[in-house]
Amino acid sequence: MNEKLTDYLNDVFAPYDGVKSVAELKADLLTDLQERFRELRDEGKDDETAFQMTVDSIGDIEQTVQEVANSSRSLERQALINFNASDLQKSDFAGVTAHKGKFKGSALRGSDFSGADLTGSSFAASALREANFDGANLTDCTLYASDLRDTSFRQSILVRTNISTSDLNGAKFADVKLTDVKLTMTDLRKALFENCTFDGVDFKYSDLRGLCLDGQTFIGVKFDKAALNEAMFRGATFKNVSFLAPITFSKKYYRAIKTICFDGAMMDKLTYAALKGAKADLSKVTVI
Image 1 (tube, rainbow, N blue to C red):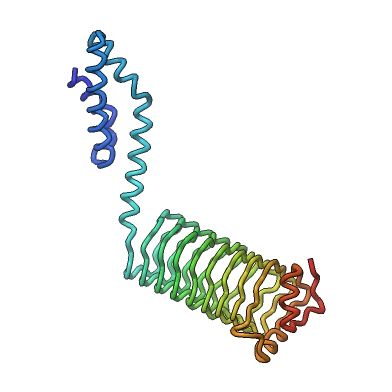
Image 2: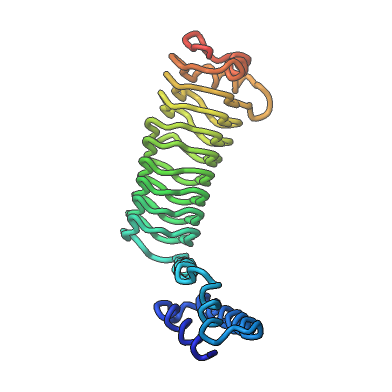
């Protein structure tokens, strides 16, 4: 009867031969079934009754095996996603799933990542000029110290994404909600932002001089110690936004704040008070 149990499991597990975790499950399950069969025989059940009751006791094992196999294969595929220090210029990664992918120090100029799920992946110190991240999921990704010139982020998912100290000359962010994104110590003067919402974004020490951010929404954003001379926020919305000076409100900082255009902007009372204290021109601002 042990042979019959073995044959039964062989049939169930046949489609998943070679999957390590499934083989381990099969061995454990066979031991459990044999023990259950012996218990039923000791209770006085005949072989056929004991066999059927043993098999019935494990329920829909085929569904469980399939789930284990799918999970194992997914992990095996992910283990192969290591492209660190690779030359992958103009590669087609559109629509791929590459969780925790490794692309550190790689040449990826002109590569297409549109619609890809890149959650947790690292592109630190990579060359990504003219890359396409339209619609890509970049949650928890690292693009720290990378060349992102002329890169497109239209409708990308940017959550806890680290883009600090990167070259964003000509990079375009359109129809994007940036949530808890790090854009610190970055030159953003020639980056393009259209119809974006900045929620919890950190611009600390970044250069935003002359940058046009008209009509954008800023919630819980930090512009602390950032260069903001002649930046434009016409028609923008501000809620709980911080403009902390480098050290104190020096004359130089006051002069810089005065050059910012807030015409038509709407802001909460706290943000308004902070900017008013820094001598910003708020004559055409609406307090909400």
